View 1 (cartoon, rainbow, N blue to C red):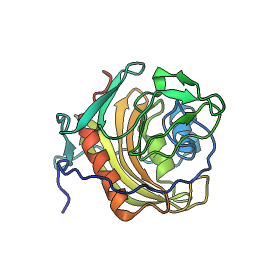
View 2 (cartoon, one colour):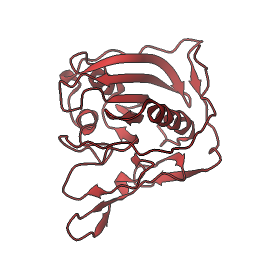
View 3 (spheres, rainbow, N blue to C red):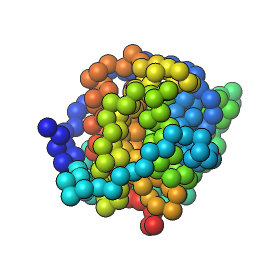
Length: 238
């Protein structure tokens, strides 16, 4: 039985997950090089390029995420450039800067603040691939159907979970998918989280990710972070 409200469990992390490289292109600094394929579609690709499926209207029994205060041991990250914020474990790392891999110098980009989170320290290369962080967050400038059409495309993903939800009073979809390895995303990569309909052709995503080699316990911990974080988001007005 699935609870209607977000669980309030939080655990600790005692291992370091392996890394893998690869990818294509970036989207407003939101996610991994590989994840960016999906996010580019949110920002730039016509919905005609995806297999769209309408977001069904929620029913009276639709599971709901309600606003919650920051859990103990969490901090709030604010993206002032985009007008939203989200909570995250204060022991995790995030950044709003690119790093020159040769000189080590950093260049701040406020628009990418609060889009990458990971229990391990990371940098965002100025001229390279994005890091594969455990949690990615961002606003897409395309309808929610575009995002869902890509992430649930049976040519590239196996859909494990797809459910209609209400997140802070807005229609949303909770999903979990596994990459089939037929595109640029590593086979077996798991993604779990929510895509929230902001209206006016925009959506907001909170997705946990586990690349192949990540332990099941660590993936479940990443999922728990996403489940806690979604209740802490403060979104721009519609």
